[in-house]
Every structure is written in C-alpha cells, then in structure tokens.
Image (cartoon, rainbow, N blue to C red; front, side):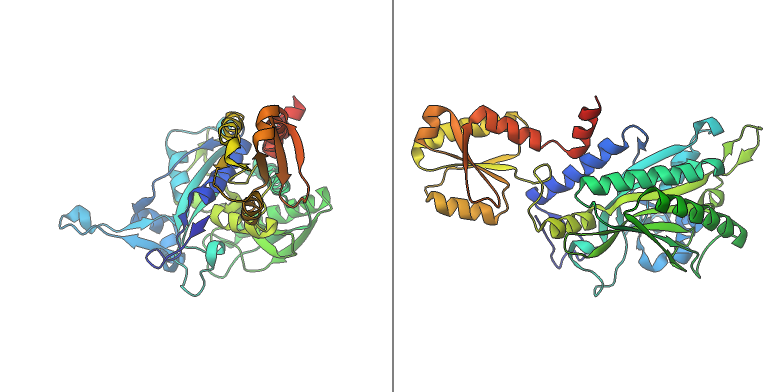
Length: 403
C-alpha cells in the first residue's frame, strides 16, 4: 500500500493500491461535505509575516518548516513557511470581498497538505508523520450560531465514523486553555463556557459517548473537542477535532457587517473529521486487519482461471465487472487454482471470481469470498450485480434509501 524511506523521513510513498484507498476516503468526505461546505485550496507556502500575524511564528515555530530561495535578489531573501495548518489561508479567503451577517455561517473545506516537524524518535509509520493531508474546514459564524455549528459537526463526525465501521464507544474530550496561548482571559472564558455547554448536549444526545476534560491541552488560539474512537481490538485513537477560535480572525482584521451596520469579527471554528488522512488509513488498516469492506478495498475482486481454457471468458468477466464500476484484476497465470486462491486470500482480496471451461459454457462464475471456505456458482451478470451493489459506499446507499 505504501512505504517510507530515508530520503523522505516522515513522508509517505503511496503505491497504487494504497492511493486507491486514500482517494476512496477523500471521495467519501467530499460527498459528505458537498451540500454545506465550499471546497477551497490555499497556497502551500506563504510569507513569514502571515505566520507572525497568526501567532504561529511565536507559538508554533519549532514545529514549522521554513524555506528561502537560493537566489541573490532581494526577493530571494524573504522567508517563507511551508504551511503546518490551513487556517491562516482560509482567513485570507474569508477576507477577500465584503461579508454580511447574511453570508454566515460560511464553511470553507480543504483537503490540505500540511507539514509539521516531528522529532525522528516520535515518528511512527502512518500514525505520526511530517507531511500529511487534513480533511480540514473552517467555519466563520456569529456567536449566536456557534453552538449549533458545533452540534452539526458532532453529527457529521459520528455518522462518518459509523460508516467506516467505528460504531462502538466514543470519547469526546474538552481541552482547555494551555499555558502558551493568545487572546484575553475573557475571550477564553467565553469560548470554554460555550464548549462546556455543547459538550453536555453532545453527551445527552447519544449513549455511545463518554465525555472528559483535558485541562491545559487546548490549541494556543482556543479550546477544542477531541474525538477519540475505539478500534476492533480496543485501542483508542484521537481523530476528529472541533476548535473554537475568537482570536485568529481578530488578529487578521477579518470582519463581517452585522445587522446594525457595524463591523464585527466572526467566530472561527476549526474542524477535522478524519484528521490526518494518512493516520486515519493507518487506523483503518489496524481496525480491519487489512480486510477492508468492499467499498474501501483497493482491489474488490480478482477474476482467475482454473485452466487456460477459461482465459477468454475471464477477460469478458473482468471487462463486465469494470463496466459495473468494480475495481478488478485478472489472473491468467498457469498455476494451480489452490495456489491462486491461497495467494489472493493472503492479499486480502474480498472476492474471487473463478472461471473454467464449464463456467464459460454456462456463462457463470464460481464466487469465493474472503474468510469463507465454500464457493457459490452464479450467473455472471447476477454475481457482478450483487458485488456492485455491495460496493456502493454507505453514504450513497443512505441517500438512495431516503429517495
């Protein structure tokens, strides 16, 4: 699926099958956001001055990568930062053009690639890297809209985790002001009070949820919720976050025109669902032990032959399966069928479609499902239709059922 090597410490080399999973996760999140969010993209590298304004240069500098051109001109002496976060860029997008209270809430989403320095001893496979993609978003809203926005994010997080197979216990932690922070104590008091009230409402809404407080573990610009899910073997992973920020819009001079005609700084809510896509995929690999549900599996089926007599028919079956939208490979090797079955089972292929001379004559396939000892002979069209139906992502199935 992927590998790491010394020339790129903490960044992932995605192979084709791993990148297929990555894109399936992105496509799922993009569909979930389509109705309520505007997807944007902010630059990868921005002048140091922007990060000084945001407070990152002072409070987060040890985790940032900086770059300077090797040229001799004055322009080449400017320092730039490779973005560790998407938020300052999104504030610039909000500021571009006059905003009214009628435009709020404005929800900007980005699958943004960010880089953060992690000590070499802290890096750990996909779970802790230096370069990763966030399913990031920033919501600009009024104070009156804040609680409802946090609750909507909570609903999105819970349903997303359930779709990915995490439907057990979930912990939501409220992380409060750290020692190193920006903003007044009054702003922090207000933000924490709103978040504490929302946390009570979240706990009351779902008996799956436990709540905790993490004193001093908030971001330097505001308190946050951390969503901790539990995988199939009982391990806890912190993924989603919701962070309330009264400071960053004000530092950048962002404002909207309120109903009374006055300028007012919006509240900014930082939120992520999967968090780091790389880390989330690492968690999925562990959770499913590599045996992904059909909609996520990089190869959903392999068409394989018993003897060479079935080669031409196997090609027909594979072509029909691809037309139905399935990710299919074909195995025409001159190997014993038991060898092929064992090899593809070890590779966690969800379905094997076995064909031979008899299947070619009857226009059928013999289906073997991963983890099952038996096999079932079905007409090819029926088998492909059943697999294609099973491979529909859960969010699309849910929308179809509503219709």
